[in-house]
Image (cartoon, rainbow, N blue to C red):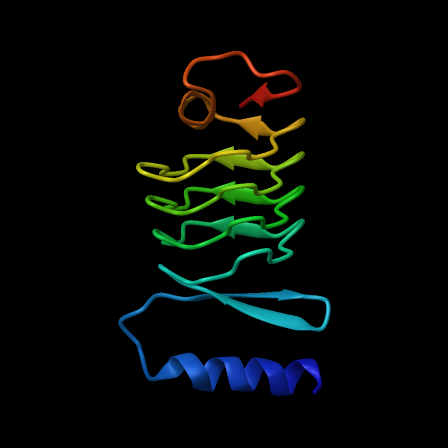
Length: 130
């Protein structure tokens, strides 16, 4: 199925729930719909840019977010267990109640709030601050 048909199907699958804010992300031949509470375990979102979206409660266990730019995104109560955030940028992200066990943050750029949340004040190796 080509990208346009996939996008059309994704749109039709979500258009009947206008109260659920969604963001559409294309990655290669795939189109993903991200919305609060979505179950997207092991998804490859490397290099994506997300800004100003509500993704609270999203399941991103084992997700590849390497090099992603995540700015002003609500990830409250999200499950990021085992996610790969290598070289990612996280700034202004809401993480209240998020699960962050075994998250990889090598060379990630984290604002102070994200750093405090991920590392409880510890000084991680190869992690930068904004």
